[in-house]
Length: 460
Image (cartoon, rainbow, N blue to C red; front, side, top):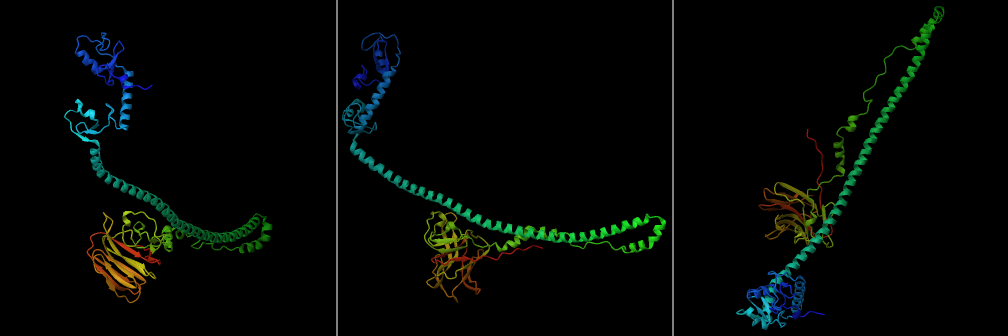
């Protein structure tokens, strides 16, 4: 059985109980209603049965309070769902601007809203929706941007994992070559040590064997002569001449002497061992003055595993990190130069669409603020720089290897035909920030950065 509002109404105010208290006669009233009733009378009696109350502060009727609150909550929810006034069950057609709440027509005429300002609900809601929509639309755009950034960050995170795994694989492969070289070098040097050990031990064994034979023979003769010395005088004299002849068969000679170099040449094997090994490693070690930075490579640029050559290929799926913001199909060197002189050589060979040069890059925004390049396209050589008219160049023959020389302090970037040692073109510019080597191609044959010669020198 569902409760009605009449079952939960205060006998004084005829409204749903608010903070109900109960008298000893079992009648309940709103606390404020009862206090107001008693304030107007001399005797605190029950408004219903007139029985006198023995307590000036009646206890709270907690059970009734909970029931009333649940009833009000349910009524308000149903009224809200049906757009009805919770007090009068009438449609909420007006909005009180003073109380900032929707009301019905009965509420408008009540004392509670006397002198207040009202607007039709539908009219005010339409206006407020327009205002709110103006605020919501930028938030929606912002949410879309944030989700795009989130997706971009996820791609970056996945690419970081791929980079780490790929770099580890290549790093381990290079160290494996070094390990193999060192193991082979170790085996070779130990084998040389053991070979010298065998040779010199064999020599000493031969000398020991010969010396042993001499000692045995001399010891035997000496023992026989000692026996003669112990014989009777007559017997001794009879064999004296023979004993003298036997003694003279073993004349005293120089003792055997060792020649220098009998021991192992330890200094040869251990002296400067690591330096000598390092010197022999030159065949494995290469050095290129410029290493390409894969984080700056256009997605259509393919780099070699050792990051020293580039070619044009299928577009790769790469994150749009700030360093990759470059309209060229190009890649930058990993290190920029902000002083001094620097050179790097590039083999262009059969590539028919390429450029080499340098670019100034803003550290803050990571975008090109200037570039100076020698390019080859459609069979023509052109010198191109930011903001200047391209210059058509004449060369003696098709370039195979190009040297790029940067003199940062003097503000000069020059290009040379490396095979003929002929100057091709120079740019002059007052550099004010780091300048990075820059390379680009639209062709599959690779551009290769030529390794520099590696040498090991000693200061005297």
